[in-house]
Image (cartoon, rainbow, N blue to C red; front, side, top):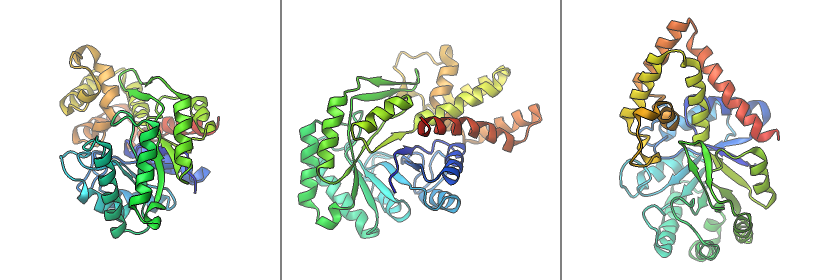
Length: 335
């Protein structure tokens, strides 16, 4: 099964929309939960653990792929070695993105850690598959470094272990700006194509991160130069957040309450400069971090108040939000 699009499970509505689409159109999308979203002790998305998220997805769509995104030391809420998380990833997911590069920026040290993690996970689940490398925002790789990474992994792992590497991350020079809701950086098609050639020479598939806010034809151009798959995450959360803002825009008290929940969460801080003025940018701040707070008791209570005021049940609200997400899924696959 070759999946071209891997999506962040930004909320329960996003997950349900993707599962509905997969069940109606064939398995088109996989999930890429980060450690903060879904974790062994619960994440910010619906408080799902690895086990409960996997059961939820597989019960509704048994063939939908789940891949841990950015699995590794320091990628959760604590500065850990990632092993407890990896243990649960190996038990309940199909794929693991092995990403030690936040903690180990040195190429040799990062490769050593990658080898150790792969061997560790295969002892728990010999059928688990892997993605190696990372996105440019964490560590920029040159083409030569990518060759060294994969070539060294081939030497340090047994052939059977190396064959479990399904994807390697390739980089084309892009990044994300959640405040402006746009893809940033300078797209370098030559660099992307050269990285693709390196990865394919080892019999491994390529994947690029940060495919958010790209037009369908921009993604297709990447596929045309050999890219096999692409990750999209925050954009889906923002589509739902914008739909919520549209629903409640006439009620200033609701907008103010969502702003307070978002502001108190501090989830927006990593995405904005230190000079950012939250009070002057209320709606933008909500768009930046709305998806982080969908499962909080305060937000759930607010949605219930809205349903009472508008005399609309909660399922109807979810269906409105899911329809916006499904519309975007169609735009990715039907062009």
